Length: 360
Ligand SMILES: NC(=O)c1ccc[n+]([C@@H]2O[C@H](COP(=O)([O-])OP(=O)(O)OC[C@H]3O[C@@H](n4cnc5c(N)ncnc54)[C@H](O)[C@@H]3O)[C@@H](O)[C@H]2O)c1
Picture 1 (cartoon, rainbow, N blue to C red):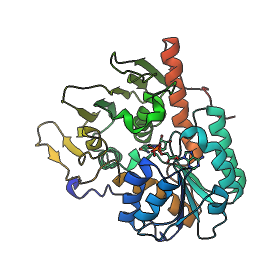
Picture 2: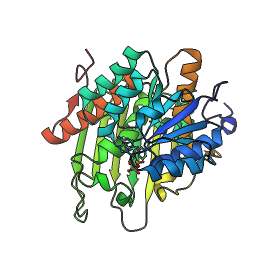
Picture 3: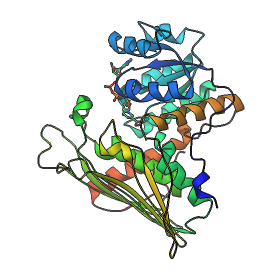
Picture 4: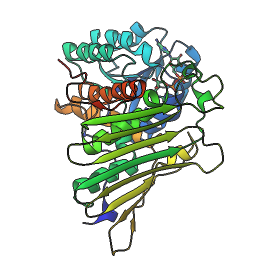
């Protein structure tokens, strides 16, 4: 196995000139989606935001080529828009999806797909009934460290996977999302959801999930949990743990992943979390007993670079008639794990996934 030449970068299809219309043009679009799309050569042709200045910022980031619209309906009526890129707060997503589906446009939704599981199912059904593609922006699957780990695991580099850990202690700049302070659910709903989706990408659905949630004494007006530990047990024997603390205030930030197996181990860092959102590239080291460790030359970050992946996957699905890698119907399984985490934490027990919120 030639590990140094592992091609972990997002696969981009032959057709990439789809017109993208942005709905919601705030932080993540400006510092995440736009630089990623520019790098990939994707075309943002239209922008709409309740705050016109946010849409105008996206217009400026396209060098003045994207049309700024004053309403969602006006953007959806633009025949140049093939794909709608939705990046609003999750409670606003459902009504936008309804209109996008009615307009017959494909869409990339932001995570979480919804704060309510039944509503998420409705969001999925709206796209299915309209016959349009719908992907969810779980870009961690294309984060260089996670994407490379996936390839290594698939190629048998660690043998049979046995253990998986993602551990993060960061000083998260919550002020970037003032609307999160009053959220009744916080850490798992908005942040660990990425790690949960990445674990599912790597190891599939677990049999059992156990989650513990806590607050930091100095978290001020931030209402919900900011420290969580989630353990997932798989039928294969894999045990995974996601442990995240957003109030590591003493300057020794860490964001590490470790995937162990019978034949080897993968260890790496999620560079973005060392100084969100400027961050640093990921790292990854592959280890085998009795051999020198091999370091992969990664040079990308979770944000913005990995944001190429979900859009590229959606474009390929449109081109080929297949499903996007982060198809929304499949994303319901990530939401089932999120719901299981809150149930586990509130009832102080492990939750069996068999039958739990399974789609009827
Ligand atoms: N995938 C990721 O890594 C990632 C990272 C950050 C945020 N997010 C998600 O992206 C979404 C946006 O987050 P953000 O950090 O950009 O927030 P933000 O507050 O910076 O921006 C949200 C924008 O949406 C606009 N908006 C709200 N409702 C709207 C509506 N009905 N129509 C049009 N515009 C509307 C607001 O005016 C604002 O400009 C959230 O759902 C968040 O969870 C995902």
